[in-house]
Length: 130
Image (spheres, rainbow, N blue to C red):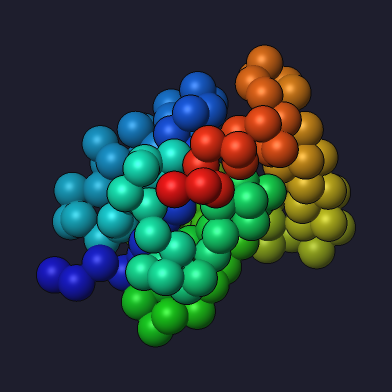
């Protein structure tokens, strides 16, 4: 079966890695391919030209038709693919969706600080030179 989603994740983020491992275990049909953007082999030209800094700023997924999705939409689609779509059902509720997206944007903006990691400029000095 062809992968239905390419899921770009930050393997240096403990919470991101935990979420990715959770999804991997449940992806018994191998519908998702997981790509660690921190890998020295990460080549943005193979993944929608999503640069390291761009990928670090927000979760990205590439659907089988080439469409790029971001943030909670990546998680919602991933959970749907592994049979747990109900987890992200609140995104479909009109008044909740904007609040959840706002919370996610806050997380995406401050996740490096929250998880005790270097800022993007420091991380990029090594990753962006590769």
